[in-house]
Image 1 (cartoon, helix red, strand yellow):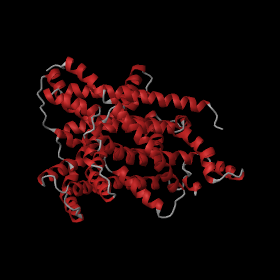
Image 2 (cartoon, chains in turn red, purple; image 1 turned 180 degrees about the horizontal axis):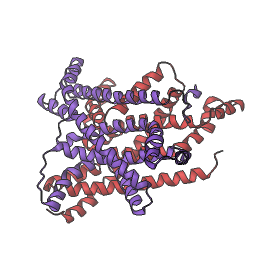
Image 3 (cartoon, rainbow over the protein chains, first blue to last red; image 1 turned 90 degrees about the horizontal axis):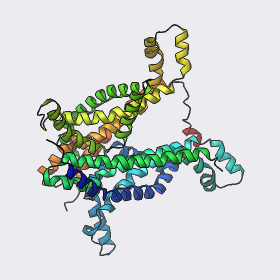
Image 4 (tube, rainbow over the protein chains, first blue to last red; image 1 turned 30 degrees about the horizontal axis):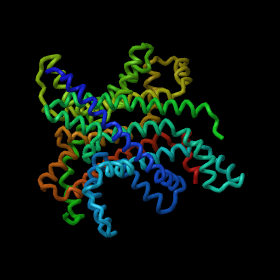
Length: 233
Length: 240
C-alpha cells in the first residue's frame, strides 16, 4: 500500500491541462454575472416593488440549495429548453453539439450573480448615504452618481469579499465534471479509473487547487493593498 | 422527453422526507466536532506560541483552498490507507457516515476558527480590563463577559456556516452515502432515469426549507440579542 509516484507525477501534468478550463469557467461566469448582480443589488437596495421580493426569493433559493443540485437541475432542464427555443426560432442549432462548458458557464453565472449581488449590496451600504446626496447636489444624475461616486468607494470595500467569492467559485467549478466538462477534477478522475489510483489522483487535484487558489488570494491581497493606499477620486 | 409533471414533485418530496434524518445526522455530528476542532484552532491562533499560530493559519488556508469534494475523496480513500499503515487496521470503505462526518468537520473547523477569532476580536479589550479591575478570574471573564458579547456577533455567521455545511453534505452521494441527495439518485435510478428534473426540484425544495429554517433560527436569535441596540454598519434602511 504505497503511493504510485510515477502515476502521481504523470497525472499531475495531465490534470494541469484542466486549469485553463476551470479558469475559463470561473472568469466567464464572473464577467457575465456583473451586470445582473449590479441591478439585483440596486433593486434590493431601493426596495423596488414586486421586483425586489422576487429577487429576494430567488437569492434565498440559490443560496439555500446545494451547488450539486443546482447543476443537476439546470443540466437536466437546459438542453431540452434550448432545443425547444432553437426549434421555435427555426434555427438548425443542435443542442447535442453544444460544448459542455456552455452549461457550466450558465450554471455558475446564475450562482455567482446571486453571490456577487449580495457582496455588492453589502459594499454599497458601507458608503455613506451623504455621498449620494452630495453627488445630487452637484447636479449629477443617479446613474452618474453611482458610476462616479458610489461604486468606486463601494468596490474598494468589496475587494476582500470579491477574493473570497472568486476562490469559492473556482473551487466549485470542480463539480463541473458532472456536466462532462474536462476540467482538473475530470481529467484526474478518468486517469485514476484505469488502475484505481484515486488517492494519487485526488492528491494531484488537491495540489493544483491549493496552488491556484493561493495565487488568486495573493492577487486579491495585492489589489487590496494597492487600493487602500490610493485615495479615491 | 416525458412532459414535465408537477404532481411528481409532491410525490418525491414525500419520498425524500424520511431521509432528512440522515442528512441532519451528518450535519449535527460535523457541527459539533467541527466547532470543537475550530475552537482549538482559534485558541492556537490566538496563543503566544508561534508554531501553534503558524499551524493553525496554514490549516485554515489549505482548507479554504480545497474544494469540498476533493477533501471528501482524500478522506475517503486516504484515511483507510493511513490507518492501515499506521496501526494496521483495515478500516475498509464501510461506515460512510464517518468519512463524510470527518470531511465536513475538517471543513467546518476552518470556518469556526475564523469565526471564533473575529468574534473574540469584536469584543472591546476594555471589557477584559474592566473585568480584571472588578476582580474577575480569567474563567469568569470568559464566561460572563467575553462569550456573551462575542456570541451576539457570532451567531448569524455561525448559522450561515451551518447552511453552507448542510449544502456541502449533499456531496456525500459521490462516495455512496445515502442521504437526501443519495436517495434522490436511487429514486431516479429506480425510474430508469425518468422524472429526473421533478426529483431534483423536490430535493431542492427540501434543502431550501432546511436552509430557511436555520436562517429563521438565526433571525430569531438576533432579534433577542439585539433588542433595542443599533448595530453599526447596518444602514440598509438609509438607502431607501
